[in-house]
Length: 148
Image 1 (cartoon, rainbow, N blue to C red):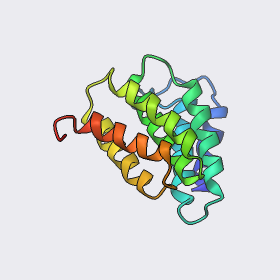
Image 2 (cartoon, rainbow, N blue to C red; image 1 turned 30 degrees about the horizontal axis):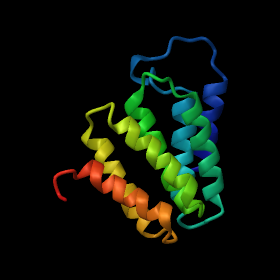
Image 3 (cartoon, rainbow, N blue to C red; image 1 turned 45 degrees about the vertical axis):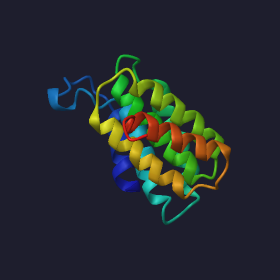
């Protein structure tokens, strides 16, 4: 993972001005940072100290994501919330969850709902506190509004 992300970072920074192939036009610095952050998040399952790097990378990518890419931004905030959970920061996870839920309201995407349910599952392992419980309840209400 480290080798692959380093290669991608080098390729992005060595832009020789060549035309970007249409299949790669969406892959920009923001996409790289969030993707590398998600890799760090996955690695943090085995090496918990990597969660902080995941938070940093996903936060950087999210800050650079164009506003019109709403669905991608929703995914970013879900990934950020999950990284915060793994980093032991439930209040920050709650803030990222709130942003993801707001963005979810602006798009019609089953995949966003699926990823929110992954976050819901991740929150089950978080320290049980007010923000964790509130996040899970808001996710459940948004994803399964008719199940109440």
